[in-house]
Length: 136
Image 1: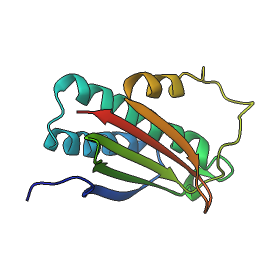
Image 2 (image 1 turned 45 degrees about the vertical axis):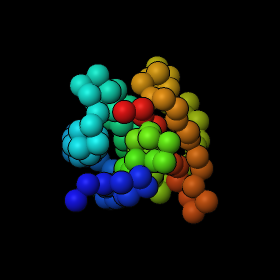
Image 3 (image 1 turned 90 degrees about the vertical axis):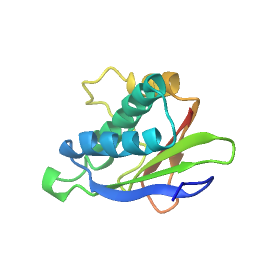
């Protein structure tokens, strides 16, 4: 069955662990391919999704021990405007600046560069949602 606008093509929870980033990237890439993403767009999608998932793994549950880290929820759909929308949600501590981060803070710039547009939202029930949109 072909997917149509607003059909949810993927809605899966993953453990917030670094080993799951590649699994998430592959799952979203497979869906994007089904929707007709070309190689260049597919590379952009995989890069931005990897960054969003990695950010959630590294930052969302930093108040807990690794074995107590929560989940990430990934939802993918084709929106009415023809954009592929990828939602990466966590249920962690939310958007709190890190003073101890060794990273250069380039992840958000990378996501902005690789997407048609993206949003970062505070979830009303706690945590953060990153929405990445790609023109196929």
